[in-house]
Image (cartoon, rainbow, N blue to C red; front, side, top):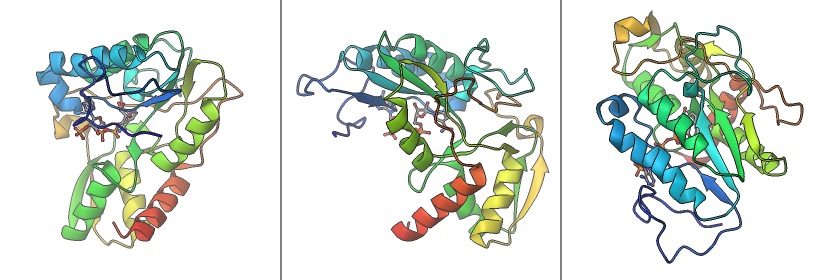
Length: 243
Ligand SMILES: NC(=O)c1ccc[n+]([C@@H]2O[C@H](COP(=O)([O-])OP(=O)(O)OC[C@H]3O[C@@H](n4cnc5c(N)ncnc54)[C@H](OP(=O)(O)O)[C@@H]3O)[C@@H](O)[C@H]2O)c1
């Protein structure tokens, strides 16, 4: 297994010649600054669409990590693989175009609200803020499935044994960002209060789906544990790592 980061290969460019032909590619590189993409759609397009074309050009079977943001959230009930896509934002549109750039031998794993023990993510931000502040304000009118990357990684091993195609792989259960934050603080023993605000009050540049629960209509798709279990497993991992 070889990990390749941005410093070694900007995927918007052709692959470096030293990269040996892989047997399998897990393609997670992306422009993920959802608000920043509204101001720089060309940058997001280069990373997410041309980048995926370049990764597919390696010629190996490919796992492409895609997003609930390919949907508008207007359906109001869980999204299945066969539902029509209708992204609201530049990020969502470029992730969707990235799906279409994966070629003929790809597993497209759509997931949502990812969190893990390292890197920048909502859980780690809230653990930091919850330790520093008496109150945080969090949106309560977007619902989704917060998904622990440890569970997504385990599911990836099973996905690559299935036929190529689109798979919705997100945590069981759903919640709002506010409810997720309350659970984080409760599990982590933080007494910080959580005050609900609306998406309109937060006033971010990129529109977000109000309801982006992902479920699979394919019986072979691996089912992930509930997001509360993901939260417990992630906090355990953070404790083990001391991070
Ligand atoms: N976060 C979510 O809720 C979510 C949900 C569904 C799907 N996904 C997808 O899951 C994948 C991982 O997301 P994440 O949340 O872990 O985001 P992340 O932390 O921003 O990870 C993206 C990685 O891609 C790298 N990168 C950015 N532009 C690149 C380029 N042009 N060439 C090579 N590498 C580049 C970034 O490097 P730097 O850190 O050095 O910039 C970063 O290491 C992405 O494909 C994302 O679209 C995320």
